[in-house]
Image 1 (cartoon, rainbow, N blue to C red):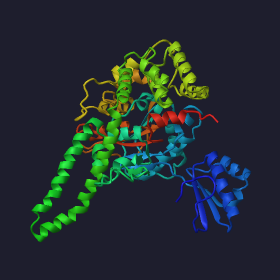
Image 2 (cartoon, rainbow, N blue to C red):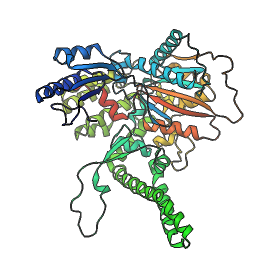
Image 3 (cartoon, one colour):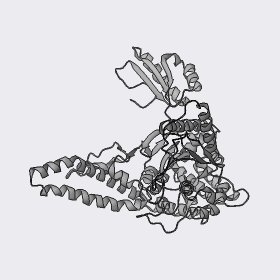
Image 4 (spheres, one colour):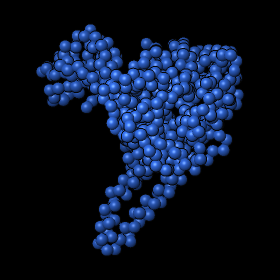
Length: 534
């Protein structure tokens, strides 16, 4: 299997070539280039194309215009909706979902979300209750109800695994992805970017240290590591606040070195045999510890820098409601020093969201400074951010954020990062609004926060899906409810960590399974909204 690239295809002695692609026009140009170069190369090969998740007439027309449509023996679709990333995590990995829904009015990704949820229900039983907040959530629920009506002939007789489905629009909580995530997994994603469970890291930290070679021949290729809960140590530390990771790693190091010391105590053949049988597991644990110690050192280099501290201080001031209504000195300095544009946009958008929009003169000032420093082509990006509700003028002169913050307890001053008691540990003080909504739905219910739900964008609703007799769940005492929470528009690793924290609470009463259109962070989110000047 090869990644799709322009020019000629890699040399391979094969008869059939299958293109496995998303239905995007720019990819059709690359495929046409590949096919034409193969035709010129010599012996004919059979070409096939699979569109994921569905065929597109536009793409087929583009292939026809480029004169290669007839080269494909099969043109099919492969309906891949939700991809499992972990035991409790599913994603559609649809990069453009947020932009399509909120900027372009294209609901294709919502249709795929509804289709994916129908597939889940076919496998794991009808979900009796659907709750939702937001315009897109309402659309997905309507599509699901319509699809269910269309399949009335086939009654689902599977005992339901999920008790509730919660559909949440990303634009109900625009704040959370803009803030810097402070969990171990969140920081890896913020600094290096996790792509499909893999991360690429600078290789120097992972080079085996040999004595006497004075650091010659350091590897130049990035170190690629897979990150998921199949790795015991990663499963333990991924959702912890980064400040709590060091102590876990040092404890693990002591346990592993003590286990290796046991070999000196193995006297009999039986004891030696037992030690040898444990050796592969112990060596894997030692390798895993070495990797995560190196990653933690790389992250620590960033988090202990002055700039990271300054940025975090500004973010936390905004989230706790300090000085959100005037031009911020740190943001001014970042623009003057021409820091990364995405960093500047994240901060300006965060200030705007925490102030329910900026005063017109503050907004105009930021826009002018950004355009004069980074170039006028970014006027399109600023327009997109405004359309998405991330960067907007304050209308009606009222800031609703303090009401939302106090009612939902979004800011907690005394956070225990080592042994957390509240979800706010994932941002060292800020509790993700989206997760707080899920927590309050579970107990005591949304009726207690009606006022805030009315302030937040989009409708909130509840639908019941009747179950055939005999499939109603009789709950055993102490048995947890299972809620599937679907983020329409993307979810961050910090939010996932907060939901896992709620699942693990002894008196929580709810276990969460998370689904989303895309795993993302503030940088990848803003990047997807930026207009690329041609």
